[in-house]
Image (cartoon, rainbow, N blue to C red):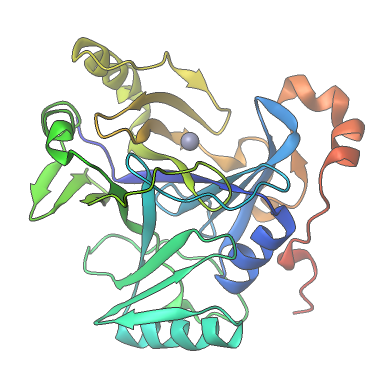
Length: 306
Ligand code: ZN
């Protein structure tokens, strides 16, 4: 039983329109699902991914309208590392971001930048051999498109405390300063850095949790294994597009294990993912009210002329 790398990463935005503009237009990801927070249907839960809405490329945001920028501290993910094909792709993104007024820093074959609310990203040349997970975008040639997640970097004051859970329970392999969760199809990495002195503030521009991918029929077994290892793990929760369990790893980072299915095409046609507001069945009768309450956002795919 192996985890198949990173399933999704969930972060927080205080500005849904600006968030869609940055991720769907500037970074060229596909908005694959526009739905509401299942705990608060007056705010969005936005999902960006590759063309098919694949796990491994899925970055999601809870909208807290008007939330001020937070900051990452100990026990929080601070940087999302994406794969790109080549050093030429790093050059492409350095230019594209500069043209959008986004500062970036090029170091070796890496490019660091942040989203408008301060969430840090890094692009790295893909050496994984995994299938690239890319979205179509008229201004981003396929050979330079983001190819899915490579690594999440988190701050930990005592990374050794996490070692037993990561290696013995979750089956991550240690490789230098990185841990890797690699299954039959994909891998994803997890790296700790020394935390800043200031405590973190969970707000806009910070990561809420990282989810690791499990096969559909192994999910229950992961829940049992974590429980037997003494982790405070939730029961299985049905998120419609996948099933989830949550627990905090010893360094304080909120982990989820999510199933590779049923996927985003369960409630809308794969060709039209994310175009309409998707509501859980029990919220469908409040659709008019919910649509009036939500901040209007512009999906760049629906305004393209070509
Ligand atoms: Zn999640």
